[in-house]
Length: 260
Image (cartoon, rainbow, N blue to C red):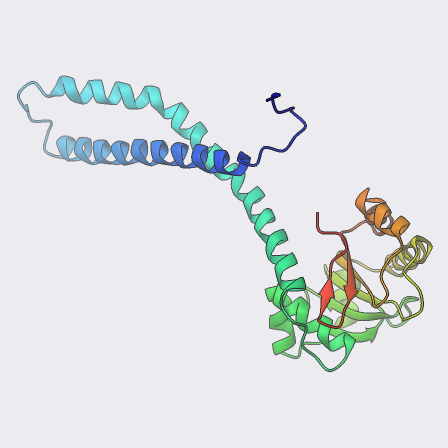
C-alpha cells in the first residue's frame, strides 16, 4: 500500500493529539505534586530548626537538584497544555453550532421569532436578553433611527445593564451587534445582494461606535453557487468585515449550506 501523502487527512490525528495531551498532563501533574510535597517537607524541616535526620540531607539536596533541572520543562509543558484549549473550545462551538441549528427543531410563530429562539439556543447571552425582554433585542429595526438597512433582528450583545441610554451607548459606548437579515421568497440570494448589503451596513456604522459580532443571512430559497463559493473563499466576510453565516429555511427548521 502506498504511503499516505502529507496532504491527506489522518483519521487518527485527533486521537493522537488527545494521547499526547494526556501524557503531558500526567507528567506535569506528577512533577508539581512531587514539588508540592517537597516544599512542604522543606518548610517543616526549616521550621523545626533543620534537625539532623540521619544523613537524609543528601537526599533532600539531591531531590532539590532534580526538581530544579526539570522545572523549565514542566513550565513549558504547562504552556503546551493551555494552548490547545482555545482550539478545542472553538471546535466544540462549531460542532454544537451545526448540531443545534440543523438537528433541533425551530420554534416560533413566524420566521423572526423562530430565528430569535434558535440564536438563543446557540448563544447563551441572547437567551438571557430574550428572557429579560431587554431593549438590546430589536425586531425589524435599523442599527440607528436613520440607518439605511432594516434588519429583521438587531441584537446588541454588550447592551449596558445599568445605564440604558441608547444614543449614548451607540456613540460613546462599545456595542457589539448580532444582525439577522432575511431575504424574501423569490430567487436565491446573489453575491451582488450581499455586497450591496455590506456597503449599506458600513455606511450605517460610519458614525456609530461598536462592531458587528456576526451577520446571519436567511433565505427560504437558498443561495446561488457563486455566492456560496464566495463565502467559502471568505470574500463575503471581507465585504462585511465580520463572520457571516448562511442559513436556509426548511419545512423542518434550518439548514447550513456551509459547514466548514
